[in-house]
Image 1 (cartoon, helix red, strand yellow):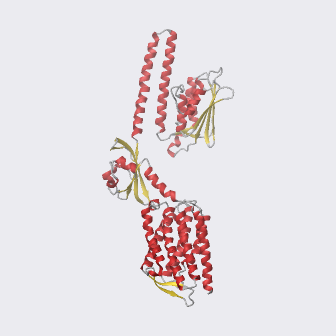
Image 2: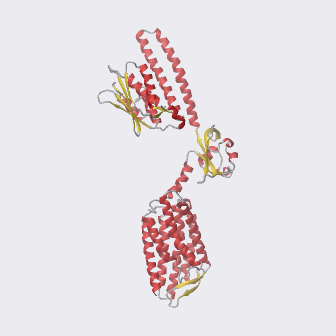
Image 3: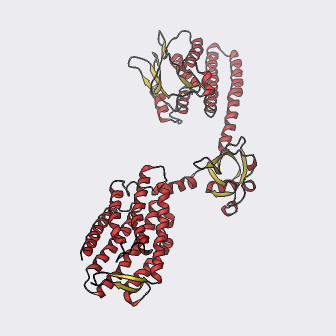
Length: 559
């Protein structure tokens, strides 16, 4: 009798802990895994309660009734476990009505058999009881008994395998969650297996007693490891979105160069159907595949005839390796660069027009102006020189964009300053220039040269002061801070507003390209620029740039 009291005490603890865990899980609402976990915990609580009622029941008929009702909780546990594992690890595609209906076949049939009770012998064939009739236990299971056992262990194994994969994840929070969840299932699972195998010779199935330990583990998982609030479910879906939603075409190959996966953009680029591409040899379906490197970028552009015409692609191959470095396959990415190449061609044509045509036409205008009256000739010459200068600025902008696509070249900031100042001093001998640059050897991208040239030139050219002065101050901290200050009339408000808006219109535009080159160049360098007015007179151009670390092959250019 004392053993029965102890069993009832432990079972009551199991019910309390399981109910508390279920309530906490229910409060998480639609969080991935919350509802299936409630089902699993409800199954454990129901199983324990039925065992309590069975032990307390005074008559054999009542004990048989509660014994059959127990099966409802038994089959709820594996169903809740597999649904939880799929939802929690982000396998949403298996949570549609077809898969869930398949998973629920065994539980639904079991519930029907449990309701029928002793009228059927599929769950249990013979009953054993102790002498004082306090314990009634299934002595010989029917065929459905073993189907339920197989169903329980099959779904338990699949769900555990999913969580083991999560336990091997690099994120510590998910690893702790997965380990505790596996432990919560593993303990009653092992006890049940030992009972079925005859290792544990107890008068009743001790599995519900183990639920008290599981309840503690579930509470720890929910409260300490934020089981349902820090959730890995989006990670699996996000990986699919990255693969399928990428603008680049991606083809995954196995070790023997057979196509094993492909995303939609790649199918459109290669102009093939998924069925004919999957499983095929890459050499037969991807043009010029034999020339691709094992790892790295293809030197040439790959031209493919698509439904929208001929397109050019940049190709890159990445080896797929295990943690031990063993190559298991590769991934080929295709980036459509057709518009980029066309833009390059347009820039080349524009550069030629600005370099040759405008220069030629400007010289003709200057030649014809000699026959005009002096005042008119001066006006025409001034306009022609402005056109020529605009053409030079246009070519400078084109060179800026072209160099931005090349590999960065680093040089000493002080050297670049000195070179720019020598050039500007020769053009504006009446302007006083002052440079304050730190002595330390700071590397900057040479792309900053046209930015500094235009900023210093703009400060000198438009300076109408009696004693024109331009001051360049550079400082180095987390960022490289450069200020070009002058004592001229300042930058007009409409010029600064156009630059801040980042676009021009017919009625709202700047007077040239110099300030735009400063802004574009700074943007390409990953920095920021600000145009402001000094308190007394003049303008301040403030440029903030990230520091660059020179590589080994560039170190010789710095200093």
